[in-house]
Every structure is written in structure tokens, then in C-alpha cells.
Length: 183
Image (spheres, rainbow, N blue to C red):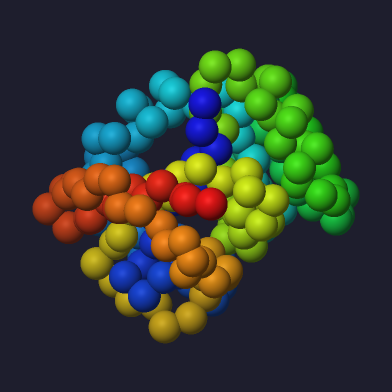
């Protein structure tokens, strides 16, 4: 079992633009059309976590409050937030706050022998890293630069450095980089 940060990023290291938009990513097509790895990755995931901004983006993008059947995940999802947020009817969403370590223990139990997916944002993933709970980073790099926005992982990781374990190309324009997080 691994705790994995699987995300897309601009070439200059942003996972969303300054308006929390992903329009820059979808200009190349829908994720399932441009990255054949998504179904394989998702088949190995048993639990997921995200921050409130990511959750709100998913709510809006999929119009989930009006169309809850569009919630695409059949696993428990933890949303880290300091605010009250609406739940998606019928989805196993658990709103939490505070330290990521005790929540990670609950996520491991729920995931069984499958992986934990850290959806984003970067600061939340950084909290898992600081608690030595992040095992792998899988970043699909899009051929755009944004100049500003939500950073991929706003933490200094230099000693020991990440270890590159895989490089793949998708749709002729995306590069997927996989790194082990060493401690």
C-alpha cells in the first residue's frame, strides 16, 4: 500500500491557475482521453483525500449538488476543511480537520490493501509529507506555463531528494513523472 499524490501540473509547477481553474489542462481533451494510465491507477485506489478548494472545484465542475450521481468515486473520500461544506448525496465523504496523521490511519484501514490517493492541493500533500506519510508523487506535466496559481507541492524537498522511478508520454503532449519519496 502506498500513499500517492497523483495530479497534473503545468510545466512551471502549478496544479491550478490563479482562479483555481483547470481550463489550461482540459484544452487537450478530457483526462481519460489523454492519459491511458488513469483507469489503471484508479483500480489500485481504496481511499482518497483532498482539501476544501479541490473538493469545491469538483462540486462545481461536475455540478454535483444538482447531479449527485456524477460523483465518480466508489471509495471513501476525506475532505480536509475548516469550513462547513455541502455533502454529495449518496457519496461516502468524510469532512475532517486538523492533523493528517490520525486521519491517515483511518484511511489506511478503509483502503485495505489498496493505495491512498492524495488528490490535492499541494499544501495538504505537503502536510502528509511532513508527517512522513507520502510515498510517491505521480505528476503529469502539461505543455503550458501559468506563471501563477496553486503550487504543485509548496515544500522544500532536497535531502534526501526524490527518486525518479518512471517517465511516460501521453497523447503526444503530456509527460508523466513518477517519484519515490525517500526519507
